Image (cartoon, rainbow, N blue to C red):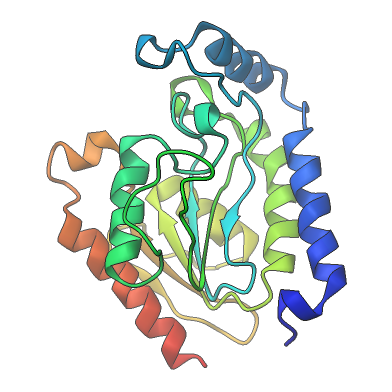
Length: 234
C-alpha cells in the first residue's frame, strides 16, 4: 500500500473531496441553518468570522484509526472550520487522543493552532451543522457519498472509532455490517477481510460528559483499545 507522499493521485483525491465538501449546497435546511448561525454568532464569539460552510475530515491521510462523529457543532467546527475544534466535545476528544499518542497536543481551538494527528483521521457522517444537532434521514444519506469517497481514500484504515449511535449506524451502513450489534460504549465489531474493525464510544457531548455517562478514563480506554486493535492487524 502506497503512502500519500508517494501517490499524487491520492493527494489530488483528497483535495478534490475537500473542495466538493466545502462547496456543497445540496441540503437547503442545513445551508440555511449553518449560514444563519454564522451570521448571528454567539455572543462569546461575536468578533470572530465564522466558517459557516461544510466541514472536511482532518488528520493523517495514512491513518489506521478513523474517528467518526455525527456532525459539526454550530459554534464549534461551524465557527472554526475544522472538525471537533473549538467546542467542549473536541476538548475531550483531542485530550484523549493526545493521551494515547494519536495527537501531538491535547488542545484544539482553531485551525492553524499546531494540532497534528498521528495515525488518525477525524471526520463526521454529516458535514454541516444541523438544527438541534439532528440531521434528517435525507441529509444523512446525501452526505453518505462523501463518507464513501473518504473511506476509499483512507486506504490504511483498520479501525473506526464510532462516537455515538449516529456515527455507529453510519459506519454500519457504509460497511454493510449485518447483523448489527446493539450500540453501547465499548461494543466492538471485529474486522473482516472486507472491512475494518468498529469500536463504539459514547459521544463526548456535554450531555454525556456533564452527567458522568462518559468519563475521561472511559474515552481513553476506547481509543487505547483502537490503537491495540490497529497494531494487532498489521
